[in-house]
Image 1 (cartoon, rainbow, N blue to C red):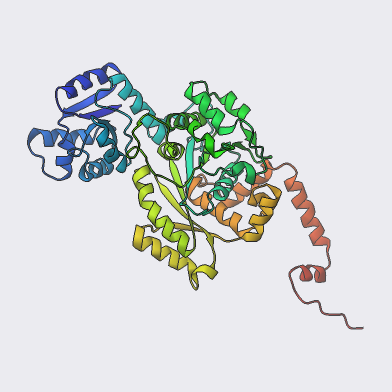
Image 2: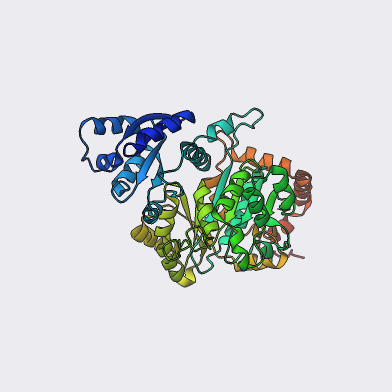
Length: 464
């Protein structure tokens, strides 16, 4: 890995030597404010030339972060070059500034080189930039399979349908024969176990976090503490059964547990709570547990965020207020916006167009996917304790979620037609093809007027 060290001397040279001992190639060492000056076109001389050349080669920048160096121009410059920022904070007062730009602030300027090298490796695994090609080229890996991904499902306060969307996303992702994990990381109001009719007294995600904190979380242990969701191929890690247990879901534990899921399944869908507040500024214990640590850790680890908004005036207003904070939290992580429970009654004529224009005008969101309101199917699924797509396969909600997954999260492989996809799904379902064939034969044996009645035509009485 190639890095650029933007740290003032003499710490910059010492850090470069320590990183070199950890097999990290340091392309150059520049002043801490070199990025900020280059982003504002105020740099000149050798520093400007060295910074411009190094940014084209490196994968990350080790930045001494403070109000002088951590500026919007510096972050935008790194974003344009596709370079990650690893911030080193000299003071605790600089951490809120770093967090506001969506950059992790767990490292300090005095940390040894081996710890910074470890953070570089973890950052590469988190974003999938360094490990994605290697995962695809592993011996025995199936061609066309994507690298393991973590998908966080977030939504503002007011129950926009985060848990329902998370369940359906996991089910649709598992349709291609993939292994999928569904994780309940909501520290405020966990609901997956109750919605799916699962026991909430089991070990679940809290046990996974405890094992991950000790470095003992293995694939076999994840298989043991998870619960299968019927025959769907989805494994569920249920959430805490009492909100008072939230200290068990610390930032480090949640991040380590979700990283361990990458070697267990292909897709990990995480249901998180709505609050994104950081309480470091209002408490004196900087090392104590944080109520929203599970949500922030899941968003930091996630490769994709699905932001759910309730498609009504109140839900859209709440979403717009929380979306800015979400973007500041996730940084450059892709965010797909899903407008849930779309119905004309709450928005009048052209409800879809009103939501689209509002999000575009006030948040600059142009790509929006819509999910219709289907109360009957949702009630039937909640009564049966099963996903909507299982209880009502032809539900418009299930169809919209299937289209959303196919367009954004798991697009079909190039060169695979819809007919081939259908044949593969039929082959994966034992006995489904035989039932379909027998049903077609019976339909062909029916009289013509019976088939007309099935289509809703009016039967004409025969003349005597």
